[in-house]
Image (cartoon, rainbow, N blue to C red; front, side, top):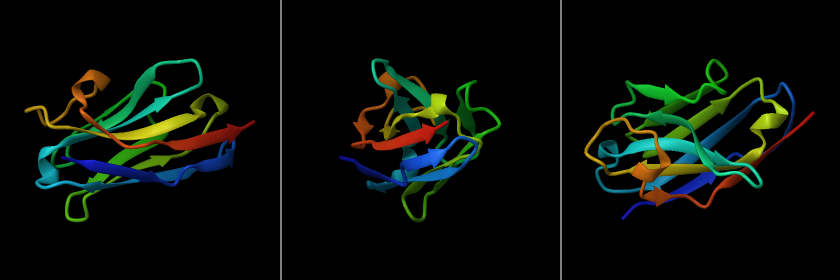
Length: 125
């Protein structure tokens, strides 16, 4: 069983930055692929970024490449999403998720089986 709690969301002006954090309560945390996803009003839940077991491999959605950075600290059971140059289109609820699939890096939402409650990010233009 894995419990995930996100923090760091809020209201920011376009061009600004936010850092999201995800605290995981999980045994063998380093054996879970981790990801950040987002869901805007009226839309589906899409992947933002994913990170492999060790943190050495990452995946980014095209819309955030060069602006967002995902990282993890296995010693602290933490995952982070640094978001720079935020745009109004980034407004959404952001979710942290964990996958116990036997693959170190996955990004489709259907492969993730543990989810946090989400944190709202609002970017004002």
